[in-house]
Image 1 (tube, rainbow, N blue to C red):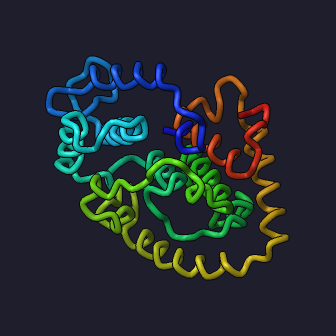
Image 2 (tube, helix red, strand yellow; image 1 turned 135 degrees about the vertical axis):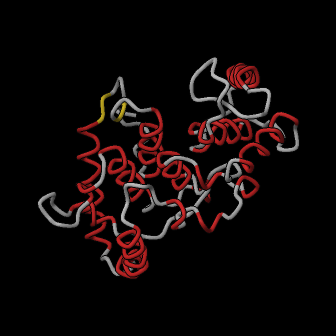
Length: 240
């Protein structure tokens, strides 16, 4: 998914093997599991497989993808994929999230409102997304990023109905209203300040990245980081 999105040339032999592997892993009802040899469908893994197979040229009207699409919609649509895949989908412009100024990442941890108030995986994901949105790679991408057919209501990806049992619904609603105001602030940030903030945040991410295991050793976050590097013109970086 990532290599095709950033414009890497197709690798027919390798992609044929991947298609065969995913085809053999597909469950009888049409979905994919998160654990090998498990019969339980995982919505996020099924969405990933659907997108990857589409990028590799499998027609959306094929039996393979038709059955997968039916299962995704039957389980609530792609809007119910997990947070990391939502961040990835934001980077590749499959879904759109409201603007948050990149400079919000520089709020110190001792502040009552900062990105350090959320989990490390989520914080790193948001960091990569906010940096990456400074450059629009999607318009130059050779692949199609339209997957409307996987969503029941694409506008409700961040709907209140998806609040977890550990979250405060009132605080969640207040933050969502605040985000719309931050979008206005985002457009007022001077270019020089934005470039300084990007440089500072990228340096921090670069120091956290291991050339062998990537960012926190997680595939999705490392792929998001790769897209960020490419968007910023750092594709030849040693870390990449």
